[in-house]
Structure formats: structure tokens, C-alpha cells
Amino acid sequence: MPESTTTLCRRWGHSFEEDHDGITVYRPADYEFPRARGRAGMELRQDGSWTDWSVGRGDAPEPTTGKWLRTGDDLRLANPGGAETALRIVQLAPDRLELRRTPS
Image (cartoon, rainbow, N blue to C red; front, side):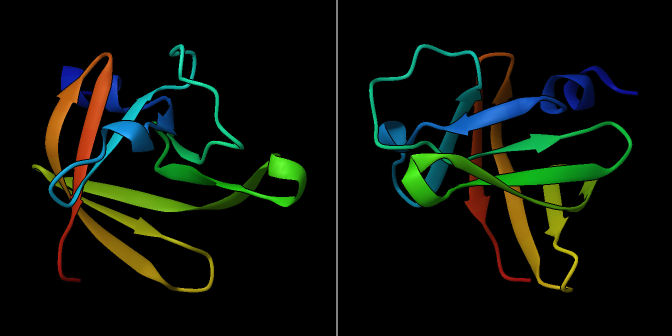
């Protein structure tokens, strides 16, 4: 598996404080984020599965699972209900992931 895909496959927390210009910023889940009332995120696995961690009741993480596929810098996330999200990888580093939503 390419090094960049190995870097991508982990649990990421949404660093909403750093979002800019239509770009969503993620940091590794163990990053020392500022305090917040819940923090969404996602986890991408090498087997093609992923988990969307939304903020649920009582600010606890609430998982939804699906499948993901990467083609170059394009990333497609699919939920079990068939909804699909198309994203472009703007930056990928061990400590930062930046994504921009693209038309499906």
C-alpha cells in the first residue's frame, strides 16, 4: 500500500477551528485539540471500510460505518444507505489532513 494511503488510514478528528476557504481540516485523533463540546471525526481503514464519528447525544461520539475508495487525490465515502460524498485531498501529512468537498 502506498505510503500516503498508510498515512491516510487512521482515526482523524475534525479540527473545525482550522477550517478555511471551504476546506475541512482533520488532525490525528490523539492530537491535543482545544476543548470543545464534542468533536466529530472519521476513521479510514486499509480494508476499505470507514467510520463517520458524528457528535451524538451528550456530546458522545456516534459511529456510522461505510466504505471508502481513493483514486489519486479523490476520495469517495459511501454510507450503507447509498449516500456518497466526494472529496478532494488538498493536503495529507502525518499530522494534518485537509479535504474539500467536490461535486459527486
